[in-house]
Image (cartoon, rainbow, N blue to C red; front, side):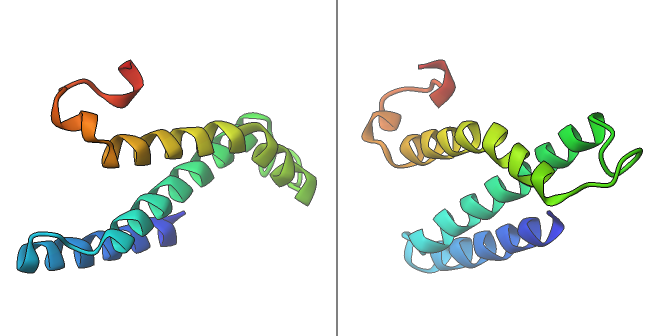
Length: 103
């Protein structure tokens, strides 16, 4: 989780440094930073759910526990990431101040 957050910071810094130079930045670095941030949040949510179920504390975590969390949180996380990308690159954002989840 921490390595994904560090990667997000590095990609964001690269994008913003290039943005300061040319006013456009590096879109691939921006998307990479968002993906790494999403991955970090996904890992944190998975670990919190596993600990709340007693895994890694009272019981040993096995690979099937990780797959169960992926099946539980995966579709929700992917849809949230897709909404964030859509909101970031849509033209309607120029005309409204609402957040993407309120539409």
